[in-house]
Length: 503
Image (tube, rainbow, N blue to C red):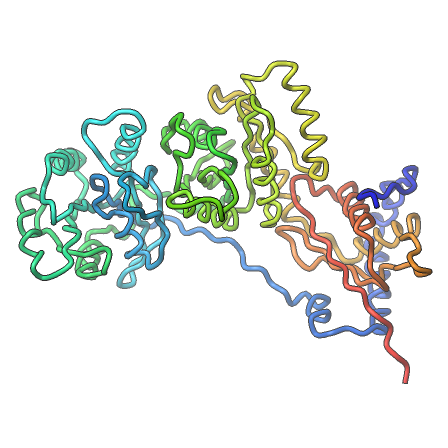
């Protein structure tokens, strides 16, 4: 059976509904009548909850203006392990290999009634090249973005030349610093921690980030140093910004796009595929509108085929999509569309988030490749024609100004609610003009419809029987034609119900 039903293309939905729009009160009365007819059918408690609008979906919130505590240190001294200890769960990727963390990554934390933001950073080294140099520069930027800096030193090794160079860097910044002497796993190791007085940063706090030993005293001292009002964090805007996840396979330009939009080197960019491992949140203002952009790790392959840092990075990418409101799915326009590209788009849709597809590296595309891209979209993404596409170049900034309009359009669709009266009037007219095909001598009918949620729009149809997949897609396409839903998935579920038996 074909996925698409082609019914009465001459049927003019807009003309039919001009009368409905003129008289919403009549549409509401019509819906009330249809709703009353449901009383003749068997309804369970869940049906009643859906009809009464008792199902609630938790809103996405974002804290603002909290003081920032940055965790710095050379590679493999336990910074991410300490971050996980402070936050109280495994939020930062941890592995025995040095250099797992590369970007400045922020998490919400609380200690002794004080809410603050903790910033994990990549390992700082003095003389490095390539990606390690980018990571070190990113750590130096973290100093400027923090209210207080916590320097983590491996007490079992003692102060190294790198540690001493970092101390000089911190002194020049003028930021308050607290010294954490990590890997003190027993009382016998506290003498090693005492040797760190030589760094001249005051008392070294002996801790074991792995086992939690001494972290309470360290945090007590740290929160006393934090200001009540952050000097670096943004205050909450009058209207909260939308949260956007930058997703795609490795090396399609997610981090480059984030840096271009921010007009700053917010995240590490390198030709090495898979540079980003932790989701990185950045607040960026575009067209006088604040947005939260989340740079994510590239989706390499299916989760069960990944391992180590890549495995945890993939899980965090999925979590970042779930916390976002819209997924900007980046593809490399200069290369053929891959199975991974299609899977990332579907991952965002399956999570129920709004979608904008971004074809990056458009400056590297010739006319022949452009024609091939159109054929790829028609062949591979034929069921997702409702997703808007923006062709741009993160390298040059060409057409990045088109993102705001596309994102706003998709999010408006994602937020859309259709009045119950208008929805049922629409479906009533649609069903009258294009009834469901007869199956086994029966013709299912739609009794009543309601939108149970938005973000994304979710509809429940109460029917007299099962609706074919093709007919459901036909309804979805007509809903999109009438009400828009550009860039937003639409979920339609069907609840066939039997008439009550007369006694």
